[in-house]
Image: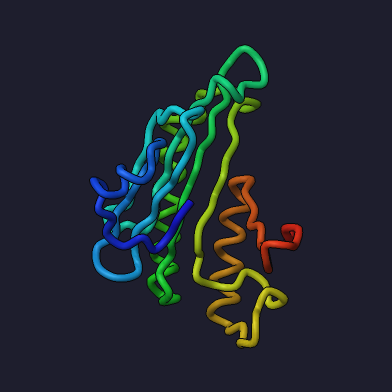
Length: 171
């Protein structure tokens, strides 16, 4: 999952990337998300944000099936705004869209065959211990609490990597 891709020239991109992808091009600076995946996956359905801030894609894979039915992967790729006020509105819209998409396209699938991946850049610090040489503001703390509560209500959680050589941190 890639964020802040801006406006991608898809003709050029397809010359260098030969596998499937989904894209929500940004409008202006600091927007745009793209999800790249292998040919082991088939796109079933997707919805993208017209501003290029998120992309929700349902993928299916016969080769990764654990039983007789295919495996499904619900991938939510997010690039949130920097402004706390804009972020709050963005996350409300994202979670509403995520819930509607899940209800329409995922809830009827066998739950044991569905995997959910939420990836991206939330543009805030989830926990004070993840702060690197900067203050963890009250606004950011409140936003993190609300977003993490929304994630938890959906059975999702944030995984934080400090660097590539470290194991993920599970809150």
